[in-house]
Length: 106
Image 1 (tube, rainbow, N blue to C red):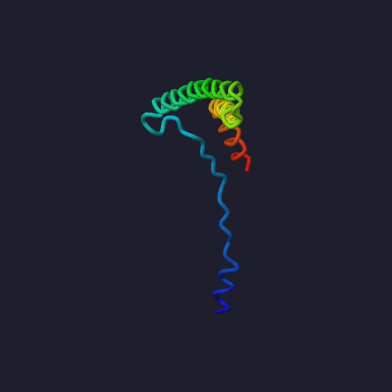
Image 2 (image 1 turned 120 degrees about the horizontal axis):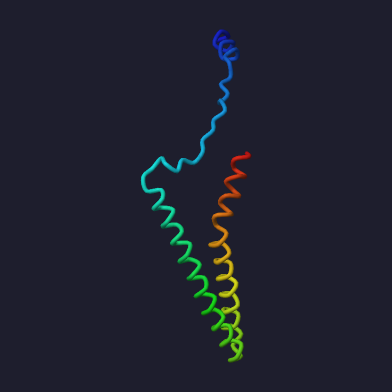
């Protein structure tokens, strides 16, 4: 029992070597098509955000002019949500790159 304990205690610790793995843009077929699809989805998201902003502003206007506070508050919330969605769609690449760089520095 004592020999096993000294053997385990005297064994060298295995420390991982310096491992550098970067994203490979040539590793899989279809990466360029996937980038095109993601760009198209971002464009669709921005277009839908603009549509939601327009509809929400109309609802807000109808609610304010008809003295309906519930409808006006729903319109205000819709305006804020659509603006937030547009910001997230537009800044998604920058956000991902920022967090990628944060993750690389850990």
